[in-house]
Image (tube, rainbow, N blue to C red; front, side, top):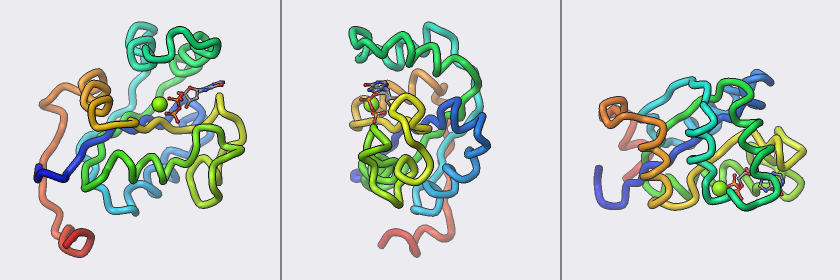
Amino acid sequence: MSEDTQQTLVLIKPDGVQRGLVGEIISRIEARGLRIAAMKMTHLDMETASNHYGVHRERPFFKGLVDFIISSPLVAIVLEGPNAVDLVRRTMGATNPVEAQPGTIRGDLAIEIGRNLIHGSDSTETAASEIQLFFDAAEITTYERDVQPWITE
Ligand code: IDP
Ligand code: MG
């Protein structure tokens, strides 16, 4: 990984899986040019879900959020590229879909904060711990893409 390359964790939340939007959401991120380094479908247990959203433990929506995130399988993806954290966050749109810009995933495909389809790490530090929570190091692939010079200089 070169110096400015970042990794970030994306979750396509249970609402995305149930609504048949997995392909649509992956397409939007993949088309941006980030490299998919790891991907799997998994059904979270309560402990992993509580860990993942631990920062929100004291918030009133925490229980509902954890219940929702374990209610059905989700898709976890590691994406890699320059500025991957911010690129994904901007492609996702604002947390509340009402405020998310049209053209973003949440702005085009969601209407409520509690069903906003997608998670993306908010910093490189949280990305590192979130990726560890979802993936073993051996599951994270490194490979060259022939198209790379047409995406980054
Ligand atoms: P983010 O997903 O955009 O990073 P966070 O503030 O980290 O947003 O919140 C994590 C998740 O918790 C949100 O994506 C959303 O699903 C849920 N959430 C955040 N705030 C609220 C709220 O006020 N009511 C219900 N759910 C919320
Ligand atoms: Mg967050």
